[in-house]
Structure formats: C-alpha cells, structure tokens
Image 1: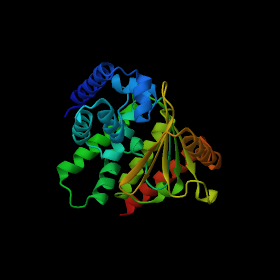
Image 2 (image 1 turned 90 degrees about the vertical axis):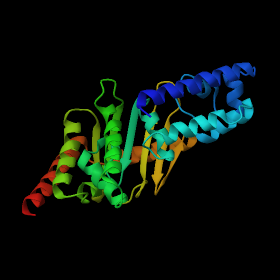
Image 3 (image 1 turned 60 degrees about the vertical axis):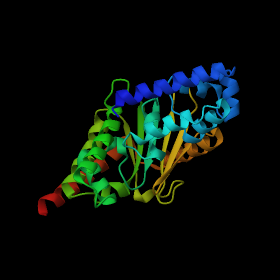
Image 4 (image 1 turned 45 degrees about the horizontal axis):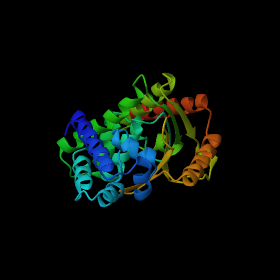
Length: 277
C-alpha cells in the first residue's frame, strides 16, 4: 500500500471512530477513560494524527461493539508497511515529533544511516534474504531519514558511543562514508551529534539504545529496543527517568566540536584501511 493510500486509510479509521463514538453517546474523554488513554489521544486518533496501538484498537472495538472493525483495519494497515509491528508506531511518531533525542551504543541510528551502511546491517541480520527484500528495507530506512532534510524537521540530538565509530559494518569504505555522513549532518546543523568516548566508562545506558520524542500537542514518549522487540513508553514517570539518563549521557559526552573531530578522525582511519585492502 502506498504511503498516501495508507494515510487515507488511517483517516477512514479516524472518521469511523468518531462516527461510532458519537453514535454510542461518548465524548472523547469518556471513551478515552474506558480504553485507558486520554481524551486528547482519542481526538488524535480521529484526526489520523496519531495511530493507536493494537491493544487500544481492540478495547475500542469492545466498548463500541464494532465486531472487530478497528482491529482488522489496524492489522491490515500494519501488515501493509515495511516495518515490524513493534517499530511501526515509532516511525509514525518520528514524523510528528518536534524534538528527537537518541542514544546509540553500537549501531548508527536509522535516521543517520547511509544506504550502504543500512544494506550491510540488513544483510547481517538476513543473510538468506533476496536482493529485492534488502533493497525494500534500505529504501524504507532512507525514507525515514528524509525527515532530517525537511524544512520543518524536528530538533534532532544524537549521542553515539565511540564503539560504533570503530566497529566495522560492511567494508572500510562503507564505514568511512557513513562517518563522513555523520560529520556532514553536524556541519550542516541538521542535528547535534555528540560522542560518548570509551574513557567515559560506565554510564546509565550500558548497551541500551534509547529514543526520546517530544510533540507539540501530546506528552513525550520514549522508545527502547532489544532483540526483535521494542518498548514504546509514555508513562510520565518512566519517560522522566529515561530523560534523566539521557541528560547524564550528554553530560559525559564530548562537546559537539570535539565529537566532530573524533568522527572525522575515525572516518580517516577507515579510509586509510580501505586504501590498504
């Protein structure tokens, strides 16, 4: 399903939700209380600004006695896009965020990846996949990264552990070009990039990727990822604690200027290796 068609389908989801909610005599706040989200969230679902998670769609079906309409629609829309179920909501939220802060311990975040780097990551995870599948995944990842080139792009801040500058992904040329890309993003002021050096030692997010997102008209959200699973968190106390961890990471990182110098030095190391192999 094309992106425009998928958005139109989500708009239908929202229109039907509003119609059935009003037919049942519920306000947005009343329905939200019954399905354990805020009334503001219900309004965002109805406007196709935000997409509900599966368990919310199922609870809406139960309260409005729809016979499973919203669950079926949700499953169809999720299955017809190139992201795993647990990550699809993150992609939707990225496009709505006013601020995105990421910490990456071992792999360059998807929003910052080059095509060759992304291709090497996907091949490592899917060694028997077809070329068509790999290229579809790479295109989807580059499409996501487009938000950082948009005039209305979010404020973007990345803290990257020095390990990901040194760990080979693909060949040395791929690594050099990837680090050149990180440097270009920093120099063009499309995002703030800091490096957490090996010398920083232990820190609150040892080995854990995390993303924090803020929105103009919705509470902040945090996302953490493990092997083939992810957690999208919006409980205020939990998000606040993750934000505190992120603040500690930033404090322990090199300055943006020193980080840029280290990234460019690492890129040159990989380039030198490429010339000798």
